[in-house]
Length: 115
Image (tube, rainbow, N blue to C red; front, side):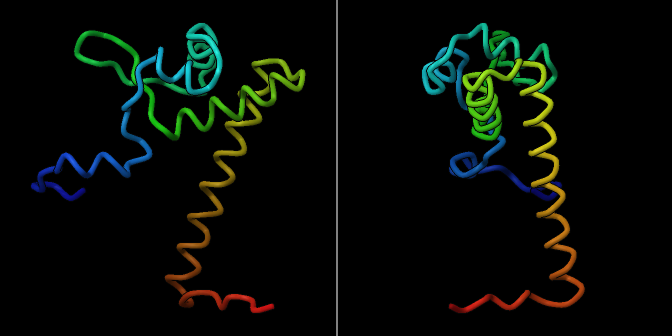
């Protein structure tokens, strides 16, 4: 969003980083406990935004990260290691996306493969 523009209510609907979910709702969606989400915050993986009343709010992006950690923990990975793995996966995906954008700016869109 550029400076001086006003955010419309519908802008938040597709915003992956909009903190729309309460801790209880996020825990329900992930099939976990609020303590699990707090542990992810303590491990530095996600930092929920706070409502005016001080309640934690999570975005869809944060919930995807938490869900991936949950998968790794369910497979036996320690939570600290799972958080590190997920953080690195997320950074790699972001770097690849940025790399693709820069490549397209420099050379135009890459051709798609046809079967």
